[in-house]
Length: 335
Image (cartoon, rainbow, N blue to C red; front, side, top):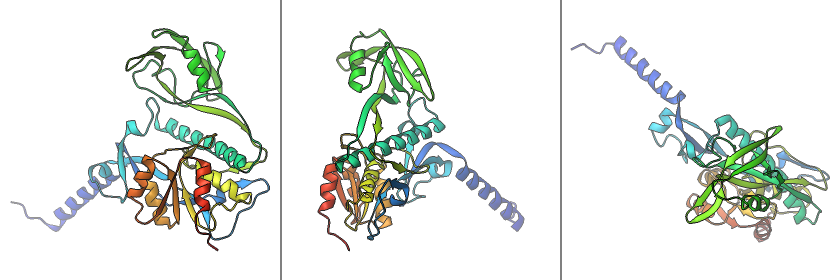
């Protein structure tokens, strides 16, 4: 039996270090969600004629760090506090690569900024014009006729040559078909328009409604009465919408935070509804560790998830922007 000489121990140690480094560097096929600090919104928002308040309070948005997990992170749990591992299919829409997913996230952020500004200005009694311009494809269902033909991020402008502006318009045109028919979609993809022909099939579950297998979101042309600039940098997704809307009101003189540090998450819609978002575990941990006074979250499952990790942080569940304003108005005013 050979003795473990210092040279052999050193060699074994170097080999082990190399293996660990390789496991740490090489990506796996899963994604890791990590908490991030809550970020003040004021430096990101500039409203014509507005100004930042300096009362010790502030509106904060919360983000989640999402990246591919390393092989070591996948093999060894507990390397990061508050982390979750998710399979690719739960993070990246089918048929979309990582670069396209990133572009979708940034596009959603841009849309949420425009909608947030519109909702805030309407809440202040300002006139905002908004016209529906089509249906934005949020996801394509695997195995359905649209799979491989239409893409997440396509904007549906017409069906069978008929201009469509709302999701109701698209549903009306699709209802003219029978399962097995072919439908022609005029879509804006990037900077160009193209016509894509897609077969239809029955929705299933007892329904014979013709479908192609796309999930749609409304898209609007929004015209604001004053200039609002929001620069979130490389942060993507729609979940900062509520925070942006609150900050626009703050800059136009409405003291919505009442001197408190308020974190907020939730997708905001043009009618003022607040919709659920992902990553509430990580967002709650980030808000809590930043030391905010309260955390506005969408009511329902999001609020339940936030309460699991609140650890003393005040959770305020809301379903709409007016409800959020009423809830904040009940907080003690901090001087």
